[in-house]
Amino acid sequence: MAEATEKAVQDAPGQEQSVQIYLDGVLVTSPSRRLTGLQIRQLGPQDRVDRFETQEVNAQGKKIRTIGDSEETELHKDERFRTVPNNGGPGAGAL
Image (cartoon, rainbow, N blue to C red; front, top):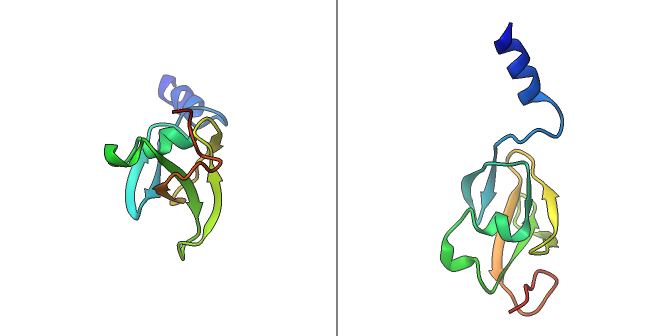
């Protein structure tokens, strides 16, 4: 019975659950379904975190939107993101 209750809590909306997404074409696992643009980049190579921004892209690689460093977004299974050099756009963090 305790197992059923524990599973119900894990499956409850808003609970922290891991999810797999694509970052720069590589499948990575996020420990949470809600991350900021900065936290998404931190799932990948460390040399693509500072001075980069996070973009959500479609299956063809076309940009959907830029996710700011402090903007929290909900992640969905197999969603696609890429990191691109930041040229002072909306994903720019304070340097």
